[in-house]
Every structure is written in structure tokens, then in C-alpha cells.
Image (spheres, rainbow, N blue to C red):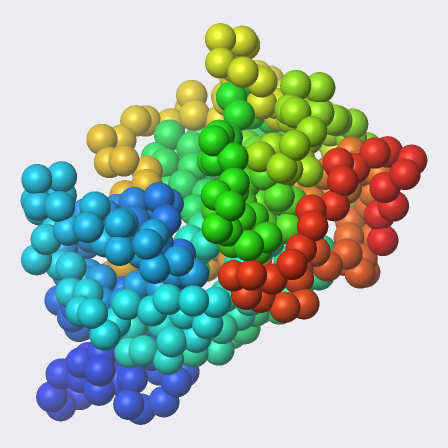
Length: 426
């Protein structure tokens, strides 16, 4: 007998809150809340910057029964500025009734995420810089929260393996985990990848992934002299490997994830990559990341993926795309599907809340996107070191980029730009 049907049909209707009181496993199982589809979902966000605030808008737009109750961020000014942006009725008129953030539910500081996880929220949006993702995701799963998790899922092998362990636990608990890899919810991609996986174009022979675009410079005017080292690096997080992961991890993951997805959610087994910084100046604004990386991946079945990402100034060539070469045709990952009017950034949140309530398919992309994250880090480490790197090496690597102490005035220097032959992968 289907237990969810038994719950829904035996005696008085059980609400989500009643089910929560029955034990942590019950609240974590989407099937348990079938029949309570109109129940409101209380959401929280950790990392209330530009991506975090937009993810809140996308959630509230996609589900009128979702409400945002809690916010957490390291910086008070960022939290308050983005809260005012969110509460601007002229900018976001349709969602104002869903914003329920009271002063006592605004948490600041490096421990803000712990206060969010201790709240009664049903789901949490994780949108801090990627370096924090493993720690925050682990805390969310321990607290039995459903999760919308921005990509990537970490910046180093130790962190991503920590994420993977929490991913296994999220699957065991049947928690919903939706990633910020929105192509997985874009109808064109979903239908095309399905056709490719059904071999409608024959076996995959090769894959190509591109993110050729312009630089991300968050603090072009430089450092505020009032900012300590750690504050500065957070304010300029994209430029520092420990926080952002470099372009191939932070942005190019989108394209590489599509290729892994097309391969049946398989990851490459090895990579040889090259890269450097030919345009990016050697100063603290531009940090210690490369401005181009090219990688040659190989999957277990011998299929190869060529990946290329680059950030040069505006006005030069750009290309953000995938190409899947099959025995009987070539696809761009979208051309075998139909376009949908729903914004994919909203579609992923619709899938999220339907999975939580049990009114749609169960979704948990924690492990597959964690593997795509590790794929990207593997290529970065190959480019930095000049060595071929294997998946087995990544799964035992001791590389841990995270600081041992956190504080606004914490002293820390960014490592130098990696030089192949000097930089050592460990």
C-alpha cells in the first residue's frame, strides 16, 4: 500500500506541520505531504547578494504559496540594501504579500547560516560565494531542510567530497535538492537531452563546451581602506580561487554539466588542460584566477569533451554554447526540444516546490551537479599544475582552500597566480 495515500486518506487531513512533528524523516519525504498541496512553504536564504535576492524573486514568482521568512548574510549593509530592493513594490509588485521578513529574522555575520538552519523554514536557498557551499549544504541536510543550491558546489576537492557525503544523506532522507544549473529545467534542453540519451542521433562521438565571455570585476575601484583582508576578499570574491573557484568552476560549469548530463550523468575519468592570465592584470582587484582555460576530457568509454572558457574585454569574440556530436547528427543541446514561455530560472523553483509537496516528480540533483563541480575543479587543477589529472586523484586529493579562521579583520593573503611546473596539485 502506498503510505502517502494512507496518510492522505485516513482520518483528519494531516498538515505539513503535523507531519513535521512526527519525526525528522517525515518532513524530509516529499511523498508524505501529498494531499497538503496548498500548504504554504516557509523559505530562507543564506547569502543575500545579487544571486540570492533574484533566487528569492524566482521562487516567489514560481509558487504563490511560498513565502520568504528568513535571511542571512555576512554583511549587514548587503542584507539591508538587497532587502529594500526585494521590498520595492514598483519593481516586484506581485510578490510583496509573500515577503514575511521581520527584523528579528535577519541574521548577520559568519554564523548567520546556523541561525537560519535552526529556524522553522521548510527550504533554504544557498547563494553565498561557492567556497561556503559544502559547509552550508551539510548544515541544511542535517537540519532536514529542502535546498535550492546555487552552483558550483564547492571550490576544492575536500569541500566537494564533503558535499557529496551530504548529498548521499539528502537522498536517504528524500530531501529535495535543486541546483542553480537551470538548463536542467529548460524545456528545450530537457527534451533534447532525452532524445540524445534515447540514441535518436546515435551514439555520442564527441562533445564541445564553451563559455567565452567578458570579465567579472566586482570592485573595479579597488579596496576600501576600511576593509580587512577577509572582508575585501568577500567583497571581491569572484577574483579569489578559494571563494569563487575560477571561471571554469563558477560559470563554465553550466556547459560542462550539460555535457555530463548528455553522457547519462557520467563524469570524465581524466583531463589535460592549459590556461593562464594574458589579459588579467596582476593586482589584488583581479586576484589569483586565470582568464582562459582549455581542457581535453576523456570519459570511461573513450568519448572526449573539449572545453574552452575565456574572459577578455568587451568587444571581442563571445560564445556560450554546447555541441554534442553523435553518429547520425550534431546537436546544440536544445534543437530537438520545444521552447517554453517559462523562464528556466523560475522553472527550477516550480520543480523545487512541486517536488517538496509531492505534486510533481521528486528532484535531487545534489550528486550529479557535485560531480560536474568536481569535473570543473579537475580541469582547473590540470591547467594550474600542467599535469594530467584523473578522477581517482581528485577523490583522494588533500587540496583544501578554506581558511582555518573567519573574521572581518582576519589577516590573509591571496596565493600568487598559479604557474605550471611551480604549482603542485596535492
